[in-house]
Image (cartoon, rainbow, N blue to C red):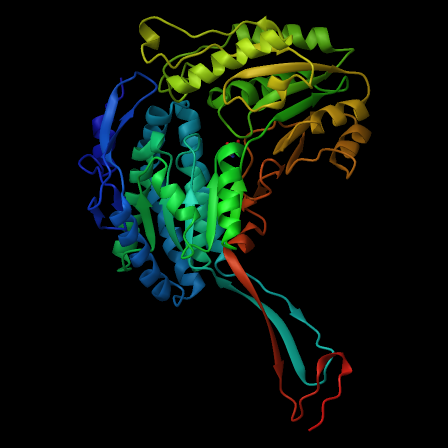
Length: 512
Ligand code: UN1
């Protein structure tokens, strides 16, 4: 039994239940009610947190604006040093923060620690980046002219994150935004408010130690109100949103209508193609972890397996056997593979998806169901299940955030790639094959249409070093590694004339 109160105490948040924070200042002036945070692991209430209102929001934005004027003047490597210290603080708090993630969100303890590790990794990445943020130099067509480009910060970056990665997604955005010279305003999922308060507390302590002003990193606890305010606020030039395609569509339209920038990380409908030339044992591990890890609540969770007809029956039997060995229960108990869904609403969506699937022709080879009994009193535990389907079934075209895995049979790789691409979403994809021709075709322009395409690795568990995100209804945004930092800055092209005449571009003559 984990003593969650001492975890909260170790994280310094046992007595904090604010509506907002601008750093070391926590408050709730214009609070619009309270919200209880429950653990899906045992159904217990962890704490009550206040919800931010208009007045809180205005306080946060005003401090953010003042802080930006200061922060953008700090040299990027110095900003990087503060992010380095954040990484160090996260190393110190990995045990407690990972435990809180596991308890409040419901993912396994190993995955909770993994999430904190992703935070540490992105801090390391951002520290290096803080001495780069490179622009290019170009050759001017005019004599004695120099042309180059430089990157400037944007201002306040709004981060709206989801419950499923309650701490890592914030850090991918915040670590990059901060080294780029922006300040951050975070509206986390109200389902994982305590994880957010813990992160804010850790960063606030680092900022305070460095005598930084309030407003460099702010937090607003809210259900929908604050998200809408952020989306429509001209003072927030960039909104990074992680969540459903349905809400993403609203965010995208609101931000675009005021010519703001957005980074959208929306739904996935990720498939693994299992070739007849695959290493089947490896494929089973990749497929099962992808489908049941985080109880199927990752954007990158494996939702579909597209399996070659020659090995279909064999692979299906192996899968059914593997599912028989899954242990479902308390995510903090490291003997269990699968924890609960986030809440009972999620359980309802899971149950409905199974019913809809059956009505549309899905044949379940591993039956689902809600678990009951002493170990499952929260009512959030469900059985991972597997169904044989056709790709065009409406339910298969949708992302259900639950451990439901669909099996589809194929004959040729071209057909498999077409099936893999034939969904509205385009986040992650994978092929299991030892055949070089197949692997390369899958990665070619005629292959996967997703933002992430893997060979002999499942669809989930991306490293932070690469750009993370996807195409089509996944939203097109990129976060994390590679040059995703450019999304957090504005590019400026500069031309400098050191001649004693003023030649015009394109050879235009203009004499006075
Ligand atoms: C998400 O589900 O929102 O690739 C992000 C992965 C993780 C990130 C998932 N690194 O599964």
